[in-house]
Length: 227
Image 1: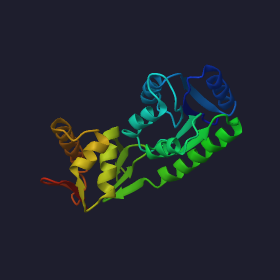
Image 2: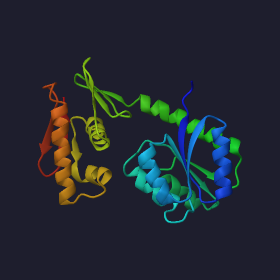
Image 3: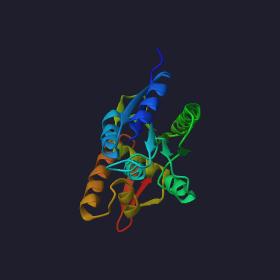
Image 4: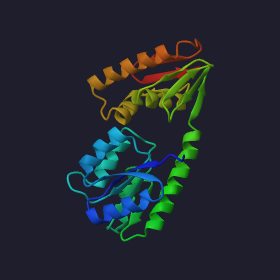
């Protein structure tokens, strides 16, 4: 049995939302429909969709604001914006805050579906490239799992996984403390910095089986992962 693709649709025009939902459901999508940005954000956190289709103009929280909040905690999920706006500045803004595609109303369902499948296919390839090796560990970033040799996998939290991903991508280089705090915590204040120190300690414990791996505190600058 083919598993359904879970899609979150945020669209405040009820008629259009239902049309899109029903059309996608005939093509083996599981569609979570929300009529405002606040509901969509809550459903994103509780339902873990694979792709987002967001109307730009929505009550309570618009699509751009919603996308910014999601991108602050998830830099991989594909996002398609739906909009009646046609100004170049709006298109540019949509891409600059992390949108992957942009569809102007009115549009055909076939075009939307093609764009969804293209993004999902591209994301699958990108995720496959995020299986990383570090010493004797295999790190599956999309699944947030860490495995030492052939032993059982360790499940990481969302923040642990993203922090480790950035450390590995900057291996043997200093990872700027302020930059990573703003990216993962949204602020570089004292309390967030202390929280980051706690996560670094947790990662050190989870990587301790390979003694060649070290996460070094570079005082005043940040952290450096060495192997």
